Image 1 (spheres, rainbow, N blue to C red):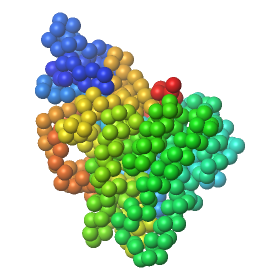
Image 2: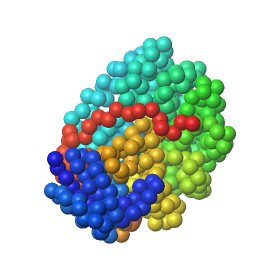
Image 3: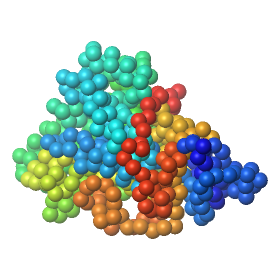
Length: 466
């Protein structure tokens, strides 16, 4: 039996803050006791970690990543190996990635392909959502089987006609099935049919620069799709989780639905909280680095997102990590913004950026842990195995220095991408040591993990449903 004790830190969970020592046995939290008490002094271990003056946090749960995703004729530049290593550097110890069903193929074929990509390559634990691109009778039956084996969430797209797009009838059928089998529908809520019209009109006018990506993907079309998804879920009697909410108008739709008592949930991402259309407008095609969908919005939308996070109308902050290198990948869209691969790198910086939000007064420390660890774990059936520090939980633990300063940069990050979306941004707070199931993967700012340590983690159904 291997035992580790972490002494002297401020343990922060979504519900508590306490100066406590943490005892770990065989990869799980065995006990917590207030520092300096006889109970804590009685902890014995093979290894002692000193967390004096530091925070002791549950490992982050990033419930929205896209490693090795095919998109726009290329692939996301992070593999499961490089992406999960970068996640560990940023204090994230569990990711939930998206397996993809191709049109005309089965869910099982898509899921097996993603298992093959991830197995033996991950530095931290992982699970899968399933992107449903082709709703038919066979797909619906497969949804039941996947829920039974721990793939309990299904993503659909109201955007990207001809690629991932589902029409309202397909969405309704999948929602009806999830209402029966306990699955959770995740929705990319943008009116893709209308957006495609605006894209073609913009290109015909010669508006080809990256900033036009944000201008054609209008906030009202995000809000309209969010409203439509909510109403379809209401008809189906199904819960709904709206991914990467970026617009104030979409937050308002979620808030209304939740005020009506509906099982509707929302996620936003650091890029919408810290970046804006100013970045999309950067000169010399540099704005291409910031092309993602939903798009970055004018800065005034950020206040609504922070308010939604504080008031729990938005429950989760994930990254939608989907990196493409500027050279050779983002450059595919020179002269035509619609050909720029959609996605930003971010899996390494989520915990630090949200700590900066604590420093800046946007959220409390416990809310930081709620939206980055506990809520995503509950939303996707991983709690209390993940997302908290309590006896019986996996010993996914971060020792965090809240006073260290760092400057985010492509020169120092560990994601496999040639630029940083936050280049030159100074933040306060930094991951020092990370344990994944009790095994050190980051040790005092040195990588001590390995590919293959990360284990596939089946999930139960959403733990928030009323």
